[in-house]
Image (cartoon, rainbow, N blue to C red; front, side, top):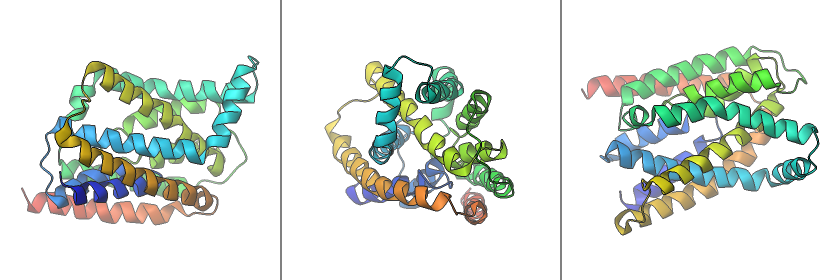
Length: 265
């Protein structure tokens, strides 16, 4: 993968990670358009590195929240911060199970399967349309909600299902406040990404191959910088946004992807 492609894909990841339009789906579409023919394993590796970059941008944007949560945990009291951390841990369980037991099957889906991406984008659009009709409330995410949202996050590991779209939509449909739903959605993925990176490093799946290091590094930087912008923008937007706008976008891109895949069979 050349430097220009790495920058383009990094920017795509950074911008789409926080918008409910499926960053993984857009990465697969971007790779197909740019003619990237990486093996599924290498393709997934690049995707994981870019997700790692946006996880770091999430930490930077939510640094105050994260520090407060850590301080609350260190008090060793069943306070609001410790409860929030427990909800995050609970939400991780479904995705951890999928990652541990179905990783090989998941990897095979990341290799230019544009038809699948298109179909999943249409499902994302349907979720966003439904969530847009839900009434806004001041309700916080409960433990039961956290587990259900975690299941939606696990399903969103499929390319084309927006992780933020699925988790925010699920949370809103459960009756939670949209701003609180977005905060929970953005923070719940951070431990998973760090866990994934640690697992790959320990297993030897990620190596410092000089042939790939430059493109991975440049993609990482592009995703991190654009992720900072997108995360900050999305926090302000989600308070007054209309999810139907993103739903229409996902629907249009999904249909285009399906047509593209069928014409190139």
